[in-house]
Amino acid sequence: MSSTRGVMIFAEQTGGVVHPVANELLGKGREIADTLGVELSAVLCGHCMEQEAQELIYRGADNVYLFDNEALASFDIMNYRANIVALVEETKPDIFLLGATPIGRSLGPRLAAALNTGLTADCTSLEVDDEGHLVQIRPAFSGNILAHIKTETRPQMATVRYKIMQSLPRDVERQGHIVRPSLTIGEPLARLSKVPTDVEKQIGVSEAEVIVCGGRGLKKPEDLVMLKELADALGGVVGCSKPLVDSGWMDKEHLVGFSGNTVRPRVYFAVGVSGSSQHLIGMRTSERIIAINSDPTADIFQVADYSIVGDLYEIVPRLTAALRESRERDRTAGSVCS
Image (cartoon, rainbow, N blue to C red; front, side, top):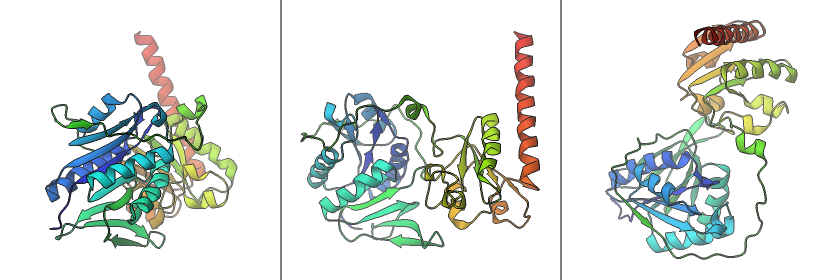
């Protein structure tokens, strides 16, 4: 087994709230660290985040390196990069993991370049081989194969897709150390002045508990209203497969699949989605998959928990109406009881 000085994950935060992908990285990082017999660390940049640092310990970290400064309250790529690079050069972790989020995808390559090491992007699985090397697994060639990648240089770096790894249960009995390294703060390249209120409250497709996803079975962009009505009745959001993005019907932020978001909702409706391998990569771990398609041989039915073969233009409106009626009955019954 190769000598190692530990596993480290980057715990990103926005507005003082740590992104849930950090807990997933800690879950996988804990597994890898235990396999190698080393410590698991997290690095957190922000301001007044002592409690969040403690939460990372509850979620599996042995050490949390907390860079605490008002200048780090929002993502500043230059100051984040400078301080994390200095920390990695001092502590020399063998493995460094980030979430494959907009922040992680921006920061990761800059860290790898500064550290003169490689970076495997958008991993969907991580393993440790018999020699203690990290095997970084990601889809390649539009998701048709899984590439197994090893990095000769150190640290071995990877960004990991959100909603892929499993978080550990929160354990308030876990003990760990919060370390405050020395800081280097320079002038930022830009300043965040304000985040619009509607953006703050918006739930993205990757965080949604219920998703209604439309595919090429839809005939025109106006038909997305039908999916929005179903999503509203379910308390969910609308997603889409790649053909709808390619056609300009929806923005890429709604895309589920290899080139978009990985999701793990409680309920996933696949409406007019054929079920290509690229799409399945992004949603097959959903707790309940309900597929609606007129083609009984559609690949989506291979992963669906419930399959409905028929015309989506008949089924979706009827399903929406039934849900609304059920909700109205529950509301009326509640009013009578009160």
